[in-house]
Every structure is written in C-alpha cells, then in structure tokens.
Image 1 (tube, helix red, strand yellow):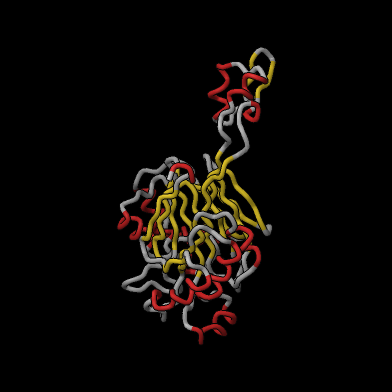
Image 2: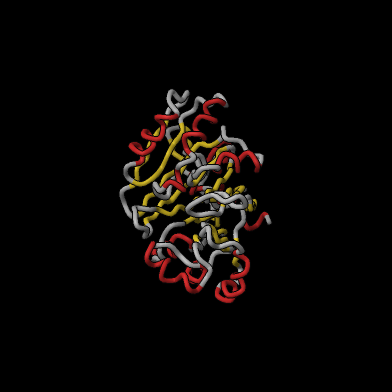
Length: 304
C-alpha cells in the first residue's frame, strides 16, 4: 500500500490557513517528498510523519515557493541522526541550486546524491517503486512526477511444474530474483503470470495543459494537479504566467481518466476553492478540492 499526504496546497506564498504545495508518500519504509517550500517540515510534523525515512526528494522546478524550505528540512534530518545518503531529483542545475541553499545548512552528516533531468521523460527505479519524471510547460524548466508501485503476476503452479522449476526456487522467483541451480538459470516469468495493475500517483503543478500530462496521468489511482485559479476572469492571467485553471485541470482529468483528481497550488487570492467545484465536477465527477494534510492510503485493486 502507498500512503499519500498533500502537505500543503498553496502557491506563491504561504497563508495562515494554507501552506505551500508539497506532497509526501510512504511505501515499504521509504518516503518520497515532492517539492519543499517554506513550512513543509511543519506540515510533516503536524501530520505526525517522520523526516528520517525520506530517501528521495523531487523538485518540479526552482521557484522559491517550491524549494525554499529545503535548508531547514536538511538540518532537521541531520539532527535526527540521519547518516544514509539522500537522493534528490530535479531539472538541470539541481546541484548548483541546492549547494547555494546549503550555505546556511553546512556540514550535513549525510551525503546528497544528485540526479539532474535533461530529457522529456525519465524513469528512476528504487526500493520496490519507480519515479517517472515528465516535462511540462512553465516559464522555467519544470517537471511533473508519477510514483508507481509495480505488481508482479500471480504464481502459476501448473506453469512452474510444466517447466520443471525446482520448488526451492519458487519463493525467490516470486520476489523477482533470478535463481541458478545446477548451472540452470530460472527466471521469474517461468512461474508468474502477466503483471497485475499496481499503484500510481501522478503529480504536476506550475504548468499549462500539455498532452504529456494526460499521457502520464492515464491509469493513475490519484492525479494531483494544479488549479491556480477557479475564477473564469483569471483565464488570461493563467495563460500569461503559465499556470492552470480549475477548468483546465478538469479537462486533463477527463482525458486521462484517473480514479480521482485532487486540485492543488491555489492562488493566494483564491479563498474558498470549494465554491468552484460544481463546475469542475460537471467535467470530471471524481474531482476533489485538495486541502492541507489531505491524505489517503492506496491499495492494490483486489485488496480494497
């Protein structure tokens, strides 16, 4: 299962009732953080989750409302006696930007490994899950992310017996390992059926609507998407500054057909997001106005 928490839902500046947009997930003892504006670590503490298991931090882009909380978070992780390497993923320039911010967080007790994205799409594999990065369209280089937990096919007893796979290899093969016995190599596909549907969360913000978002949101259990403006009169402003409206996010969801849509990254001028949700749900009925600390635990479809 995958725990998901929308730590904050605000864009541009934090407000007394709304923190800056950030997402945190937990799976198999490992946590992933996407973006880290000021106040992110306060939201994590309020949620009751821990900083120490954060293994990967992804950045959509390097505007202050998405990264300015990083030095404080790193200091807190260091004070929690973290020693394991921390992986950071983001657009080109990541190492330069982080090193500049870390002038005020020197001598961290753990190393940072930087992965800088340069292509339109890239996939990274970690401990039982994958992160897909995909380029979107903001006024600086910006990426969206999908977090995927793949799921192998079911064990096929008849298939294993038919291919004379030794019983002592079955358990390891089901875990995806290769097994060699008496100079014979056995592979997982010899005992497993076709892959089953896994779990997928897609997150994008600070962008105009582009086909790449639809492509990556397809098949998602949860699609978290920017809705900077709900007011119809803000359409031109959204286009000028390369953000998205509620209506545009709903249209993307209609094309991608995820199981659920959460809106986030609201303009400071947008006080009550729920006021605009009736028109959003006319386009995509399974839409929700995201709120700070809104959480869900996603499970494999046959475990619900």
